[in-house]
Amino acid sequence: MSTQSNVKVVTTHVLTAMKLREEKIAMLTAYDFSMAKIIDQAGIDIILVGDSASNVMAGHQSTLPITLDHMIYHAQSVVRGVERALVVVDLPFGTYQGNSKEALCSAIRIMKETGAQAVKLEGGREIVESIQRILSAGIPVMGHLGLTPQSIHKFGTYVVRAKEEQEAQKLLEDAILLEETGCFAIVLEKIPAVLAKKVAENAKIPIIGIGAGKDVDGQVLVVHDMLGINQDFSPRFLRRYHNLYAEITGSVTSYIKDVRNRDFPNESEQY
Ligand code: KIV
Image 1 (spheres, rainbow, N blue to C red):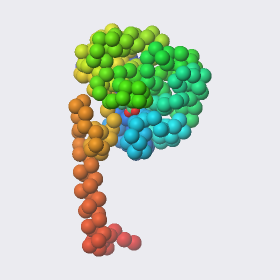
Image 2 (cartoon, rainbow, N blue to C red):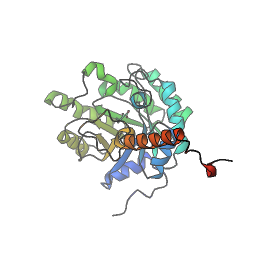
Image 3 (cartoon, rainbow, N blue to C red):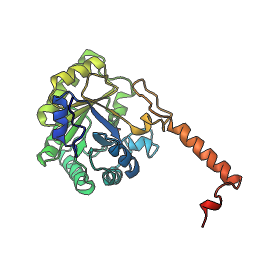
C-alpha cells in the first residue's frame, strides 16, 4: 500500500488524506529541541507540545499551572528541532475559556512567536465561540474531548469518561459540532473504545485517540510515558516501549562509580 509516510512536510491536508486512505496517524508529545528532533527524524506525523509539560517537565500535579509564556518557550524549542512533523501547541488553562477575544490573542501569540502550525483546545460546545474566532484568523485548531485534564477539578478524578449514555451522547454531538465548526482533527482521551469508534466512523476529520481503543484514525501518547522515563503513571492504555528510567539510572550509577574510583576521565579522555 502506498503511504503518506514519505511526504516531506506533514500538513493538515496530509492528515485528512491519511484518514481517507485509512492510513493511521502517529502522534507524540515533545517539549524540548532534542526530543523533538529525535522523534521527528524517526518519522512521527504530529508533535504535540502538550500542556502535560506542566506534569512531566515542571513536576506539577495537574496541567493547570502552566502559563502561555511557558508553552511558548517549549514550543519554540520544539519547532527548532522539527523538519517534517506538524507541530500542534496546547492553549493552556485560562487562556481561551469564556473569552473568545483572549483565545484569539493567545493563539496568535503561539503562531507568531513559535512557528508552530496549529493549536489544540480542550472542550466542546462551551468553547465553540473561541474556536470560531481562532479559525477566523486562519489558525488550524485541533479539538480535545473526553477526559480533558484542564477540567480535572470539575470531574474530580482521571477515570474513564463518557461511560454513561448522557455523557456519551454529549460527546458525540460535541465531536460533530467541532468538525462542523472547522477543527482539522480531534483528540479523544480515555473514553470507551466503542464510542471512539462511532465518533471516528461519523467524522471526515482524523480522530486521534489516547486510551480510546484501536478503531480511531491515529494514536497519541506522552513521550515520557511511552519511553518509560516516568514510572509513576501506569494507566491501562499506556504501552511502554522502553524503560529509560532504568537505563538512565544504570548509566548514572556507572558514572558516579567511575568518578569516585578515579576511572573517569582516563588518559585518552583528557587534553
Ligand atoms: O497535554 C497532553 O499531553 C495532551 C495529550 C494527552 C493528548 O493533551
